[in-house]
Length: 292
Image (tube, rainbow, N blue to C red; front, side):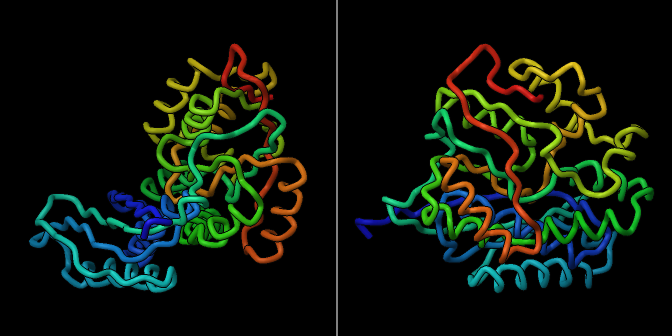
């Protein structure tokens, strides 16, 4: 194992969809994503479960765990154990152990001026999840978002080294801006992102206009205003959309222009959800991130 690193990640959360089985799948995909973002291969996982055993049907536990098991199976790993507690609110996730060749480790640093930024999934899962909880989400929006959240980042993770990616991270609770800022800080660069190149799930803008925005997304935007310069053409609703807190989002990758073109050509033939070019990397400047 001298040529490999062992890598680990843990993530769990409360239900964001009504279907227990789908919740299990999404939570598992989200937890495994960190391993893929580092260019690694997951090896095995442990369940983390909290459940109000006296208040909800026990068959819901079986459905949640089955969803997690099926997603782990899709990733090619086993869930070898775990821990559960009686809790007031359901919670589920995984501890995931993986490995990566030392020479292939991808981190959230190393982005270079001149690089292109790619994002492998649309944005808006936080807003749609809030709409689901309020009972106002449309079926098309729910399907798009849940299909995306349940999709493993396996394909993207498996080709990071193939296309010489310089830096990568998965987009989760801190949203696009929060996770992008981590790369900027550690790489001593700045990002310019084209708002018109960002893709959002169907209905996200209308929901945001109606005030269906989770508290986490609002906090993300408040924090991001410290290091983000928005063009005057971008309104408050659009700012919240960009800062939306994600669950099981895509990978944000930084790589050379030539390799970005090859990555997109290869990835978009194979993936049901296309990746998009969203911006460029520049020398460090006053604002870490500019949204134009």
